Length: 392
Image (cartoon, rainbow, N blue to C red):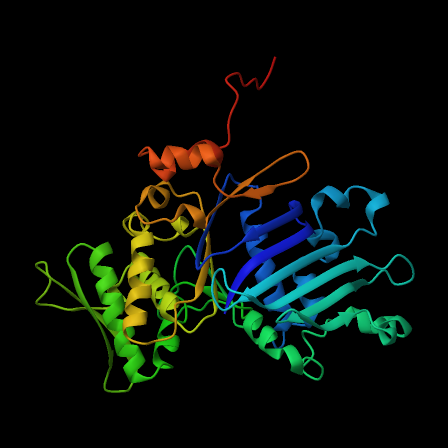
């Protein structure tokens, strides 16, 4: 299952947005235009569905309430307090295939009384047939019902629980500057966010031996392309049963294998990143990986994704997760293998941020031999005027 289309109105930086997603999608734009905000739409739906997450009210509270989620263009205007925020997501089995699921959620602030954040509209379509349409007559009689979505309620979402399960299983990769070592601890978010390098061994040990061996071999092949002299990656258990990783090199160190306690933070993050792309996740979000993954990986990143997908298909494993990535990395955008149709450009404007595919002129530049990085750098880099005065 893939998210093939995302629409939203009055969502953070965007007055309105309508984008189509591929199996791999790259969100590109200058800092502050809303790349992370756009990535937060599937995270928001996932937070609504996750057990122990507090449902709709918990997802809103995590983001500061509807007043902070709703478009910044409206929050400063008191006359627009009733303006609804909405998200609209379509899912298909493949890109270009018929829409199987469509979910629409609109939220508004209660105008009187307790000023609660309420569901203004909730609709679900399955194969083009409307199977949920709120608010219902019961909702209007009891406004407390509108403080929750039916998506989060297992007692009433039986007809579309597959949709809730999909949103619940999405994952976002985030880094920490320094990975915890033996004796150190870190607080895991527990909300679908995966901190690269943290809890890696626990996730590896939970996989069956056959799948683990395939992943270790595959990651080893990917690491060969990113780490000079790298040869193989092994998973072992010591005499007490504790798991550990071991790396072999083709350089002068090959006689003495290196265990994971000596791995650098970058190496652990790379291993965890590849592990995540091979994991049974339906939807994977990666926010600016250039901030925590080495340049050697960024330079060949699209080729890695294509190779990983091919390996999974050859081994009849589940398809790779659909991946949406925000990036400003010149190394990544200059690497071969990026499909121009998978690039979405975000730009700021007076009416809020907008999203678009590559323009005809930009596609013509690519056909003439210009690399994607050079085509998009004027958009990515914030322009600074030639004359900047700090004082008279």
